[in-house]
Image 1 (tube, helix red, strand yellow):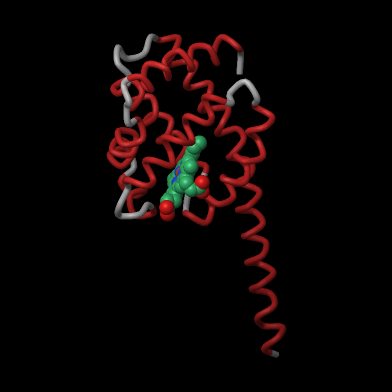
Image 2 (cartoon, rainbow, N blue to C red; image 1 turned 135 degrees about the vertical axis):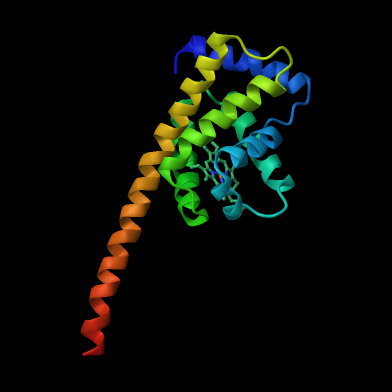
Amino acid sequence: MTSLEIALIRRSFARAFMAKANIAKCFYADLFLRAPDLRRIFPREMGPQQDKLNDMIATLVRESHRGESLSGPLRNMAIRHVAYGARPEHFPFLRDALVHALRTQIPGGLVQAEVEAWIAGFDWVAGQMIPAMEAELAERRSAAIIGSDRVPYFSR
Ligand code: HEM
């Protein structure tokens, strides 16, 4: 991410912070309209999940100048996400829902340069998470194949 993108994200996030905007609440409401099938993989009670996502966004914004320290935690989080049922193809829905939530929840909305900076930030996060998810999915598939080979062998 460029230092200009980081500055634009921070400037707009400061407006959200001052207004105590619940970005995650709007984000999930919009996400479930865009991708209704995703609703069933989340808990019924979304309050705690909204808090976790709001905290995560705040952490990412705060640490955005130290990308290398975020990579490991993001990759670990991506691996947990495979067990939740999240998949790489879900990311575009999240990106659109995030832009919608920021535009509507941040007082004054976003100027185009801020929208582009948030998209660059989201794409950077996705670029950390997706390869880790794909590696985890490949490992699970090969474990399943080895497992299915073993069944006839041991039952002989
Ligand atoms: C591929 C798209 C994604 C899907 C479908 C998805 C879905 C989920 C689900 C189902 C949970 C578990 C809820 C529960 O059972 O309590 C969860 C947890 C969480 N998600 Fe996501 N998620 C996605 C991407 C992201 C991204 C991009 C972020 C932030 C950068 C994020 C942040 C979190 C956090 C902080 C938690 C709390 C638990 C944990 O850290 O593992 N998720 N997500």
